Amino acid sequence: MNTVDAKRILETALICAPQPVPLRELRVLFNDALGADTLKVLLQELQLDWAQRGVELVQVASGWRFQSRPQMREYLDRLHPEKPPRYTRATLETLAIMAYRQPVTRGDIEDIRGVAVNSLTIKQLEDRGWVEVIGHRDSVGRPALFATTRQFLDDLGLQSLDQLPVLDDPSGDTDVLAAMAAAARGLIAPEAEPAPAEDLFRNEHVDAPAGIQEST
Picture: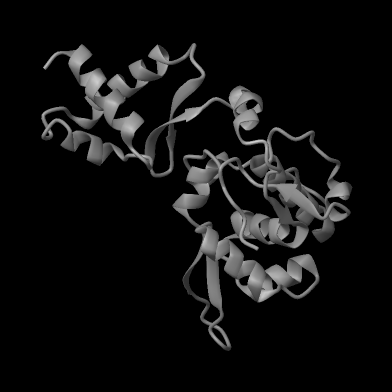
């Protein structure tokens, strides 16, 4: 099989796939006749082939997928002019703490936020597939430990947690929360004009990523 045929097969499979496809599954397309290194080279070539188009080939935590470029968002939204779903401030802060301090317990989150965490907030993030229980802390009551999921990384277009925005070294807990929430807001609503950190605690909602519907 020549390179052109292999790239065409990869391209077709990825365009038709409803979810990101990991490298090990892409090898199945060729009955393992092509190694992982060869496939990576072909995928990189495909990325270059699509470099001048409105759709791009990207690698996220779960594998490879085609997606629209961020600059196309304005035009695609015209096909679906309904108001985008939005997250509450409490949900955004809770997600930010889980992302940057994981694994964390509900008590850890409450210590950082300074207020009780509504169980419905955590359930909403679990239902979204963005957080999950990965174990229990060996302490009184064995509280559940929460962490983010691969789905969280996929939906925000990240390959790993290392790609989360780097935080400055703030001086106090309130500043820590503000920095984490600001970073999370930037990921969830990157098309929005960035707000000062202190405004995050006055705004009630922030936009959810395109194509993701928020539960009521």
